[in-house]
Image 1 (tube, helix red, strand yellow):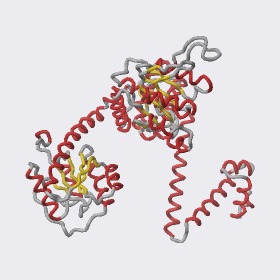
Image 2 (tube, rainbow, N blue to C red; image 1 turned 45 degrees about the vertical axis):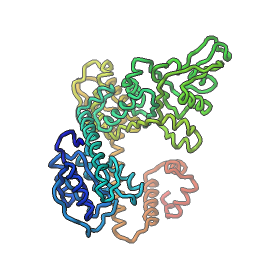
Image 3 (cartoon, rainbow, N blue to C red; image 1 turned 180 degrees about the horizontal axis):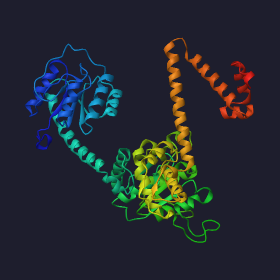
Image 4 (cartoon, rainbow, N blue to C red; image 1 turned 120 degrees about the vertical axis):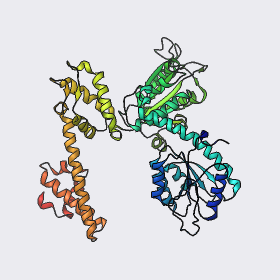
Length: 503
């Protein structure tokens, strides 16, 4: 039996109670593992700092918060009070954060509910095994350890790739954040399986089309074949079916020649259905047939044609909600959502902003008469805190605007930033300060202990109305619109708070 590919790598065991612990340690030692027990969370942390622990055996029902065993003797804790699963799962998260590549095998019993197991997976558990305290249960644990060692080595390799950012070069995308690196790893694995549909989700402007192109480039089967993009919001009406699936000559008025359509034109390659959420409902079952049977029926034809094409769909609307509202077919959504790649917004990966800005400065270098040799670091800070929901597209537009209106010099300065972004930064800072002041006020009210939630909400409403009246020179109708109220509701609130004399 092979353990750890011949290496003497320690196994971290979260200690179990009483005689069960002794039986487990004895069984593992008999098969070549040496265990050392520690009896606190702090000691377990010290072990992870001191040595590599590819595998962590974790008892979810341990009677102590965390008892890590890394080979050697073990004390008995049969009389220790049982830890609540929530507390134990919290310790699991801590251990995983200290050693992200370690593989955690949960030792559970049949009484443990499925919900708790699922939460353990969210905290970092890799697999589960039942243990009933007898030596017959040792072999399955050894088998899990062998499998976990292999996954650990794979995780180390992927971790090294994440650190050197090779995946960005392979995908042909600019960036350096861990969030995007992980996304591209998933995209690369999906690309290798050339026939599986991919659904790319994310906010507008995050780069969903670029990710789809990267999947196509990393697809060994289709990379040298066509890549076509179809904007589903633009193919509407009676000609939409013809655009997708083609038509025969004379199939309808104006069909003076035969047309292949997007799917047949992309045969052997990849087709991106951008804004797939906007696809008209009559076309959805026809698209479903292409996904299921790999067949298309041109308009006016009586025989279907086989097509070999990978479908990537992209959308910025929640398809799950559209399915619930009967705006999108459930079966089509399930067929498209085989692999889901969600592109994080730029605000969640600010470390990508300098890399992306340098990329756009090179792309649009011709927009400015001198080469750009540097960027003030404060420019990156401003962009990080002022970019809105436009994401990468908004950053690209900002860079182009900077280059177009820059007058002189070879360095991007704060004075080159578009005024709108500077104003947005000021507004964001003001909102942050206001939120901090409000939080302090709420904290003070809560500290007194004499105010209920309705009382505090009522007081806050009165304060907002008073400030709005004192600062506004517009009519009550305009003020009501600004506050999102009807004019009648505004008057009622002013009367209730005795503010009519201010109006």
